[in-house]
Length: 382
Ligand code: ADP
Ligand code: ASP
Ligand code: MG
Image (cartoon, rainbow, N blue to C red; front, side):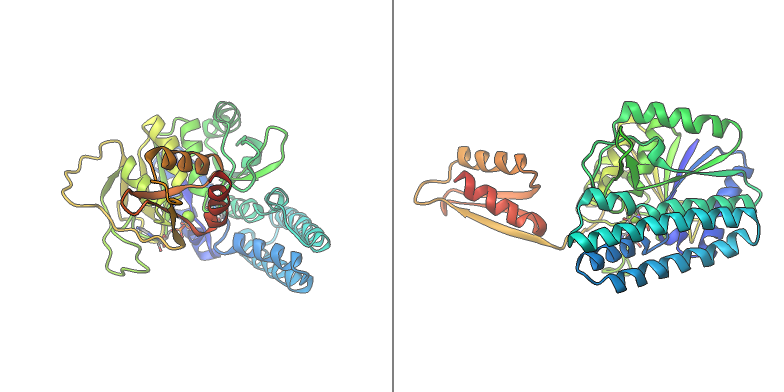
């Protein structure tokens, strides 16, 4: 079985949803067992967050406009995917319920004047819940038996809202119980990426771009033969194509190389995707849903390359360099170790560090959003 994940741009319009349905149906007709993971239509998650922020800032009118336009967009796509009939009215009733929930949450953000991560996680997966229903509908139109599945029913996570991690033994048990009977009946499950729920059923999200991570989690739980991430480029490229237009597609990468590229900002892959597949030795492929004839990039244990140069160049924005100077004292390795230990305890990721004895400084590179907390931790410690 292959777990195939389709990102936001791959399901970003009715034409693209039909294109994806054709790709999946082609593989099904050749007898391939498939579990599909889908993201929200491109831009939808960001719009939901924008509506929530507008409401919290007191601009309820604009928040309502954003929600109305999302409602219109999804109804227009549904009209083409389902035509007229029971499936369309079921979908519309479901979508309306979800949009009313979103509006209620926006009203509460407006009253409180703030958004908590936990409350945002309750509604921010709405785009995935709708896109899987549209894609499953489109697959049925193609004659491929398919069913939309909400990962909140079987991807069990901790309660680190906004960046939740799966509880693997429980997720494995529930995922297998839910999806294997469907696959056996010849049905393609179309599962929401990005979202899960705690053991008590409270919705969580795996982090922005987390649909890739969902695919890797499901691949590991289902002992998939491979996990394929279908996106809008031919694979992992030698550089970000938005910065280097002539970047080339890499044929193969090791898990370690792909993890490093993803961690340092190659948007094409969520950084947490590698661990679950690497632990089970499942090969990962990055492929282009706009160019399905291209083989893409293979990420595997020893993908058989003999490389003499670095595979790719990644640029990372939003970093800052913090120089810590000893107050007349020598900046010893013990002090450096203490600083790094405290920063790790406060959840600050130090991406790079150098120590100079002569200048008595320790230089740290951290993400800009960690800067305040890094400075606070260092001031408290020293
Ligand atoms: P999806 O919607 O399929 O999840 P993303 O937008 O998350 O897609 O990731 C794909 C995008 O990542 C590409 O369109 C490309 O602009 C960007 N990208 C940045 N760095 C790289 C890289 N090294 N290789 C490939 N794509 C990259
Ligand atoms: N829809 C989510 C996001 O935009 C997750 C994903 O696309 O993978 O962040
Ligand atoms: Mg992505």
